[in-house]
Length: 97
Image (cartoon, rainbow, N blue to C red; front, side, top):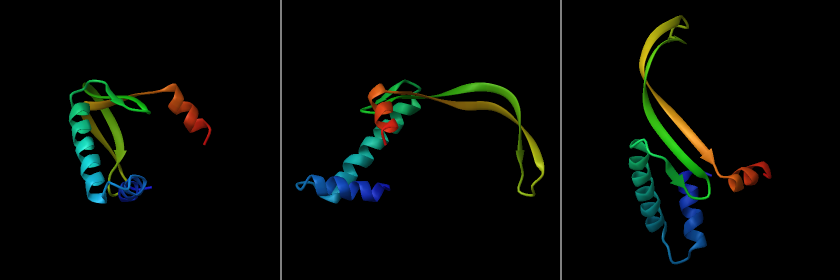
């Protein structure tokens, strides 16, 4: 289900909400969530778990493939680390599907 389909689904479940109201609420929530995640603190995702994204110093050389298929080495000085702690109830729910 994509973003637009989820908006329509929620609007159908709650007859008093229009698609525009649902879209505005969801997009506002995600904007605030993105701001909270960018601080590097643990952020609670209700019913799912906790998420943290931090920026770390790095001093490594990575090898990737360029547009011509040749290997290209590049130096990386910063990296993002994402940590996710899923709630047990969510893990069980995922396993049962």
